[in-house]
Length: 266
Image 1 (cartoon, rainbow, N blue to C red):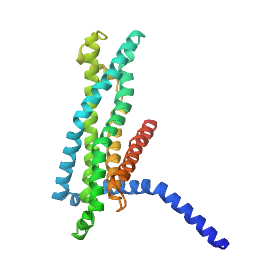
Image 2 (image 1 turned 135 degrees about the horizontal axis):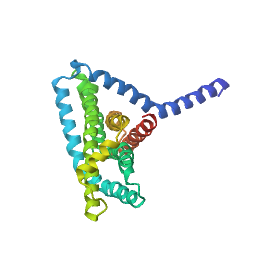
Image 3 (image 1 turned 135 degrees about the vertical axis):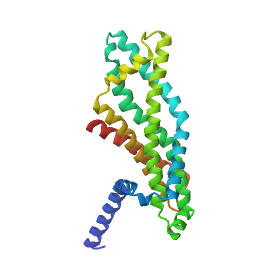
Image 4 (image 1 turned 180 degrees about the vertical axis):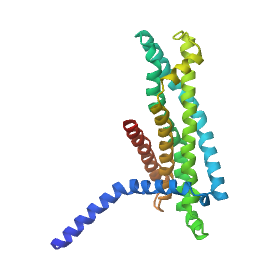
């Protein structure tokens, strides 16, 4: 092998390594722009796309509702009750609102809702679209003149974003109410539920009203999009044992990275 052949072989190895590491993030960024661009075009929302969006939104919200409520109840005991108890012991009960807004509403709610979406609806989307891709149904749609991006990716991604926001609101309210009920039953707090919720609302700044919904929408958007792209990127050699872990890793990154970046930025 000549020197030029060695250089070419080395460059090709570097190229393969680089593409393997940055290929999916670049595809995710390009697809995110494509979804946002097509979402504002009325011509993209044909009847089949609207039907798919409605079905996906129903599946996301219904499928995650029970898990969201149970998880929120546990979070209410673990976070709300503990905060009320220990801040009361320390004589800093006035900080209850700001602590719960920062820890529960801004940070914990988007993170846990994103994981719930990934574990329930995200993995189902990876499996469903992976089977369509390997079974040839996606190519059949293209042969019929249908765009898989508009029919499969666009409605599911937006449904995940809206479903994430919906479940996030339910999660935050359930955690606060359940945590207060437990605290009241034990005798940690003596105020009414309405006074407690009013204290939480008054502790929220304009930035909090932007940060929490933005996190929920972005995380849901990216979880849905990464699940769709992972499923549609399946090959004939892929099985559930290889596709599911890849979808889970992509989904975890779609939850953690936006959460960290938005925490630092907003």
